[in-house]
Image 1 (tube, rainbow, N blue to C red):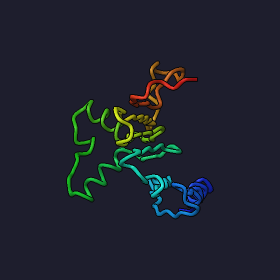
Image 2 (image 1 turned 135 degrees about the vertical axis):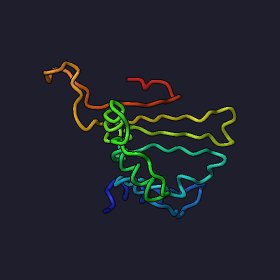
Image 3 (image 1 turned 120 degrees about the horizontal axis):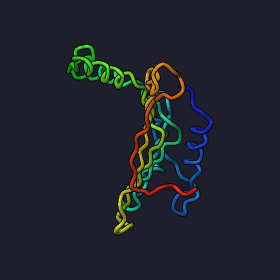
Image 4 (image 1 turned 120 degrees about the vertical axis):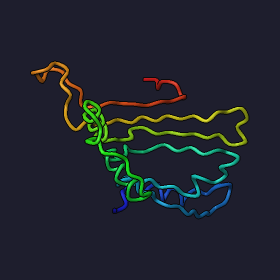
Length: 163
């Protein structure tokens, strides 16, 4: 996958960071490819992690795909067979079939692990995921007036964002 302008800009910013009073510096890193979304991680991100901690924020939503793809991955990678929804009795087959065919996207992710310099600080985290159902679940049968197309799930210990 080609580098995006944002990825290049972050890489250049990391190279140009003079660090602790030095006039020049260098860094090394990797660009993780999480289901097509590029996430750069460099030595600048991890420098002095023990003392200063580590902070990571997802820059853009990451589509993880359908849960059923995870079932296939577990089977091929670990040779563990997870039963297909069709192997379950009704109505569980319908419920599980809907869940495993849900498209999952990580919308928000933030974690801040304090270093030893931040005495008494706690780890902060936020994770928000959404799932788009394969088809709308109509709440008023026979109409398209009201339906559910997915769900949102998340948790945080950082409080609610202020507007």
